[in-house]
Image (cartoon, rainbow, N blue to C red):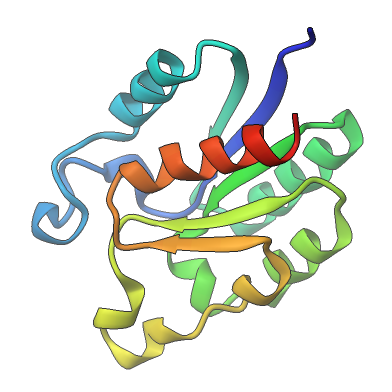
Length: 145
């Protein structure tokens, strides 16, 4: 049986997880999230990518589509609330995308209550910390074996 190939895509400032606003995002680093996913899902081949640049994220979405990944776990960070380009990229590709946020965006500032990506993603997980990544992967492997 072929391993599923899942892209875990992270947007701006997520490279600072564990250091940046731990009261809001927790004290776990992005590297630790990677380790947890590898440990929990040894049957999955992961590709991890983080960028603070919108165009790099768009490119990764396009490349994942062209390479035939099984699915995408995407934490777009602040671009959630501003990026029509990322919305259009998600809408244009075949792999299912799950939007993930460590914090509950709906309990924060009003401008964070709007996600441009949610309407074009298969689902959204918000406010469950690093567990959100695991839940997204679990759904992708169970729904697209």
